[in-house]
View 1 (cartoon, rainbow, N blue to C red):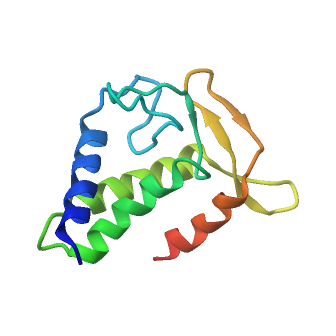
View 2 (cartoon, one colour):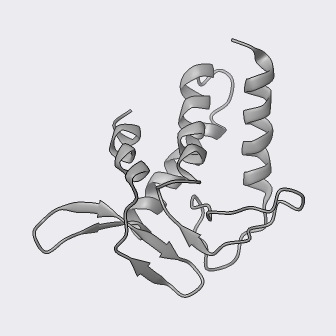
Length: 127
């Protein structure tokens, strides 16, 4: 493939790894919005759905496409995210169904709300 795209993904991952995280935001989770100029988080909500799902997928794709000989950092970031998903974003209903929601790290509140894009998360986890 075109090395420019791999290099762009590497720069984004490095920037995400370097962002100062609020104390209430577990390692591995990324809020919905990041300021394009400052790189600071401008949202307190985290989800596995739209606007942030590609972040998590990119960590895994970086590692799968380039392999462990390149760097284990994308795999570390992906696994860190999976642990954080399980701890903060995954719930089980009274009927026994597993789903993801939206968690606000500042208020520590959880919304039983799952957008359509979050339905792809199990496939990402299966990889």
